[in-house]
Length: 267
Image 1 (spheres, rainbow, N blue to C red):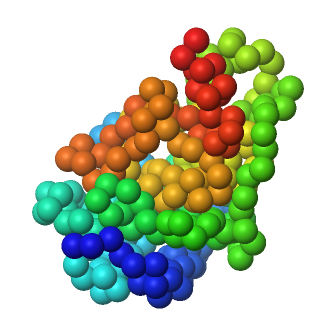
Image 2 (image 1 turned 180 degrees about the horizontal axis):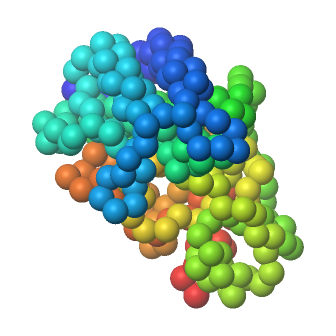
C-alpha cells in the first residue's frame, strides 16, 4: 500500500480529532480532581493500573477509528495484541488514557493519544489533554499545532539552566555532564511530557527504558513537526509496529540542541 496522500491525512484529521475529543469527554465523568477516580480500578501484572474508563475509551476508539480506515491494523495498550497488525502497512497506535496512574489519582496530566503509523513511521498524531483543554496534532510534512496555533521551536542553544523533566536517574546523568539544570516535576503522562518539549515549556524530556509504542507514537510526530527530535541515546529514531513494541532510554529536545543534549547522556 502506498503512503497515505496528504489530502487523505487532511481529510482524516478532523474525524480523528473529534474522536479524541469524544474519548476525553467519556473519561471526564470518572475523573476526580485531587481524589481517587470514580471508575473501577484493577491492576495488570503487579503494578500497572487499569480503570473501566481505559476500557470504555479503548472500545470506542477501536470501533470508531477502524470504521474510518478499515484497512489499518490496531495496536493499543488495552487491547490484546493481534499479530496480524505486523502484516499491515497502516496501523492505528492508541493509548486511550496515557497516564492512567495520574488519571486514577486525580492528577490532571493524562491524555488520549492516537497515532496513525505507515511502514513503522507516524504520519498522523493527535494528543488530547482534557483537563488542560489542550489538543496537540501533527501530520507528516505539514506541521504541528496546539489548539490551532502552530508549534515551531526556534531555540538555538540550551539555556544556562535548562528545564529538564524525566526520571531522576536520567536527570542526574544529564546534570553531571552539563551542570545544574532546572528540574521540573516528572510529567506522569509520557506523551504529554514529550508534547511539552514540542511547545517549548520543557527544554529536555528524558524517557526511561521500556516505553511502548502507544506511549510515544503520536507525540513523536508532534515533536518532529515542531522542530524537535525524539531518539534513543545512540541517536536512532523509534520504529513502530514491531513484534515487541518496546523502546530503550530516549531523549526529546529541539533539533538544533540534539547533538549537545545527547552527548551529555552518553558522557
